[in-house]
Length: 345
Image (cartoon, rainbow, N blue to C red; front, side, top):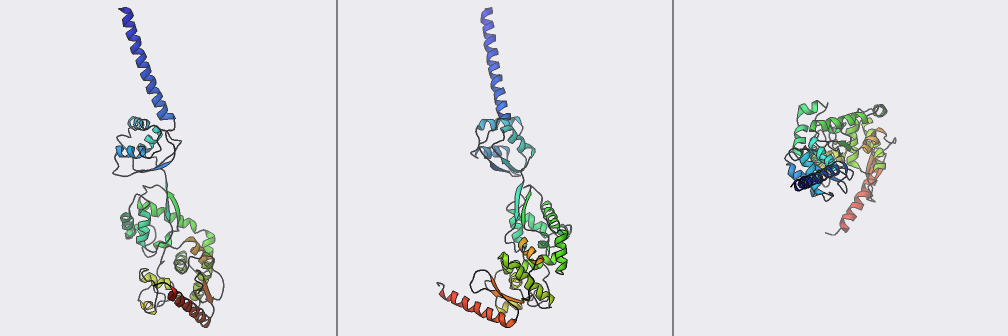
């Protein structure tokens, strides 16, 4: 009897030891061994349930042992609570690391791209809203709130003066106010003492540089020619001539015109540089760095006029006199007419 009892005790002890060993090995694996075969992005939204987040991780196709992730979620309390944010899971991470990351909110920054063609505040709102947790409606509400922009030292008319197109690293969950504060801080840093000196040499304030740069941007995306065009407009400003910039007229019509005709030049708007002297009240787009630099480092020449090159290569023909400009314009119109005539209907 005693031998039987002893044997039973030994069997139970062995079973417990084996069970403890299994638990120990599981915990060791969960905490010490990488459990992912590659990197993937994980987004946890405000309405994301813990189980849904777990399912998203398992559905990534990058998990070696799904049971390990489930155990870690349970042990770390992630099965009950997840933190809103953007997370990058990579092949060096353990199940426990990922579970803690999602529960405690150890977010991975995202790259917010504020660049490309941004011609309206609506476009800006949409561009930010598609990349960040805050949607376009939240961004628009901030932009059109006078108090919000006044704290940044600007308003809707000159907001584009306070944004330098670039890619910014920040947290996906950043509030809209924080996003714009970051953009303004980057803009302030961009305006170094040397750039401020160059602006003064052109007789412009930083905001006026942005306004003129937006017009240059509307004229051409051909970067090598941007300083030449900036020089043309500076010459017009200095001689007391109206800027007569077609992009400002296009702006008045919300960029809906395929071509600008003489009748369009009569629109009564402070942005219509065919009717009003000087620079418009604000930028007509968010000008890229190349155009800002083009104004600061504008080419010194005597050109007053320019028109599109009849070669249709994106460049322009420049002229000092109006008669030369008319010759260039007639050459372009002739080439355009011929081009349109030969296009299939």
